[in-house]
Length: 175
Image 1 (tube, rainbow, N blue to C red):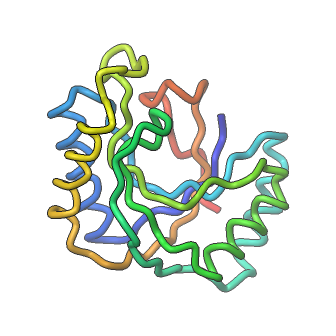
Image 2 (cartoon, rainbow, N blue to C red):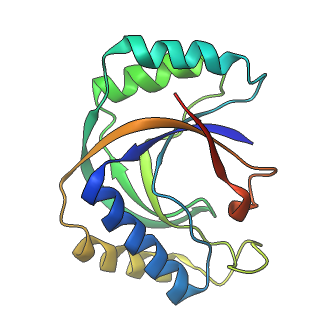
């Protein structure tokens, strides 16, 4: 699976990484890099050159987005505890244009994940994370995240052999 990500900048990236790592250690889940998934890249990697050209020319980055909530819910293992961010006109334009360029499917609401409910060793989905536990973890995260806005930039292409093998996710290139 290949995706285009926007990454938080500076101290925000470090703060989120620390929180993600702390939650992963405490709940024995997987660690991952803080990011907002712009869109998936379902087709040929050749479209990434066109995506990179758009990123260079669009003039939209960096994007500052407002935090609207921190949510804990049983949605998917990849959206269990996350920061909901405003789908501002600039972010929406950036994501939709890249979606069109790479031929990605419909976009999910923009967010920054904090916890995936995947086992830290096997990476299998963990059914022991129910709505009440995820809501409680989200409440703790609200206290830990004092920023009301996030600055996103540094678009990259991330890939892995499979969606669930989070340990194999790596940045292939910058856009």
